Image 1 (tube, protein in one colour):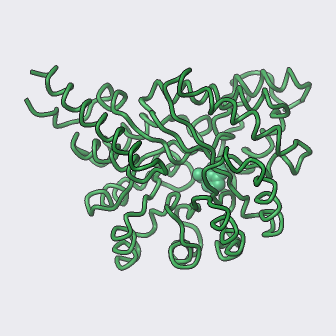
Image 2 (cartoon, helix red, strand yellow):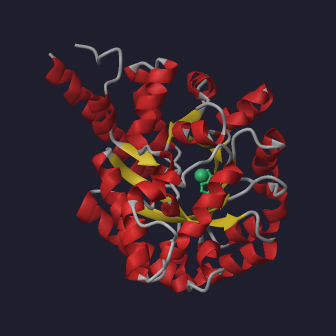
Image 3 (cartoon, rainbow, N blue to C red):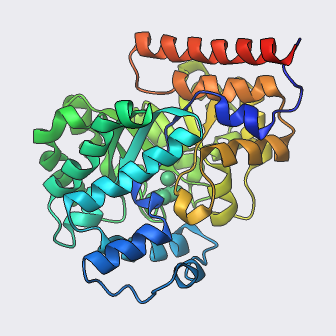
Length: 346
Ligand code: ADE
Ligand code: ZN
C-alpha cells in the first residue's frame, strides 16, 4: 500500500530528520529564561512567562534581534549553557531529529564578560551526552556576529582554535543590513584553512540579498547557505546551487515573523526544481515552532505530498556535514521508516 498522499503530523514527527539551522540562544524558552534569571540574580524586567511572551513583538530581523540579544544576559555559567542545549536536544529528539548542527554566538557572550571557555564547555557537554541521553548526534557551529567588526570575528575564530575538535564549522549571523559577507571574506579564508566547514546566513528579503548569495557562493565558497531563499530571483544562480548540491537551510515559521509570509511558494518551488532545501526551526523559543511544526506548516501551505516531505528529510542529511558512511546510515533509516509505515498501513 502506498504512503498516504497527504503527510500527517504523526508521519512527519517520526520521520528521521537532521536540523541544520538552529541557534542555541534561540531555544531559550521563557520558563528557563526566568529560572536562570532568578538563579543568577539578574533582573530581566519580567517575572512571569506571560510577561516574557508579551515582549516577543517583532516584524523584522532587526526588531527580533533587539529582543533576542538582551535576553542572553541570563546565560552566565557553563551549567547555564549546558541546560539550554540539553533542553533543546530533548525537545528536538521528540520531533524525530537524529542529527543536529547547532549555531552558537560566542561574541554575544564574550562581549559581556562571559568566557569563551564557559560557553563552549557548557554547550559541548550537552552535545557529547546527546547520543546516549537523547538519541541525537549533535555538533557545534560557531557563528560570527556580522554587525560586529571583522577583527572581532577574527578574535573569536582564534579563540576557537584550542576547541577545534569540538566545533565542526563556522557561520555568519545577526543583522545583514550594511554587513555584507565580503566584510568577513578573510576570516572565512582562515576558518577554511583551520579545517572548518563554512556556512553563512543570507536572510530573507534583505537589501542586496541576491548579491550576498552570489558573494557567499563565489567569494566565500560556502558549503551551504542559511535561508538563501531569495536565490529564486536569479535562475542562473539557482542552477549553480543545484549543480553544486548546496543545501539551503530554510525556516518557514521564522520567515513568517521576520517578513510577511513563510515563503512557501519559493521553498516548495526550489524543492520541486531539485534544489537541496530542507526545513529547520531557526529560533524556536521565539517563533513558536520546533522542526516538526515547520514541516507541518510548509506541507499545509504548499500542499506537499508525502514523497516531497520525505525528500526534505533526505535533503537534511544530504546537506549535513556527516561522513558519507554516517549519511548513508541515516538515509537507510529513512527508507526503513517509510517501508515500515507502508507495511503498517496495509
Ligand atoms: N540570529 C538568530 N537568528 C537569526 C536569524 N534568523 N538571522 C540572523 N541572525 C540570527
Ligand atoms: Zn538563523
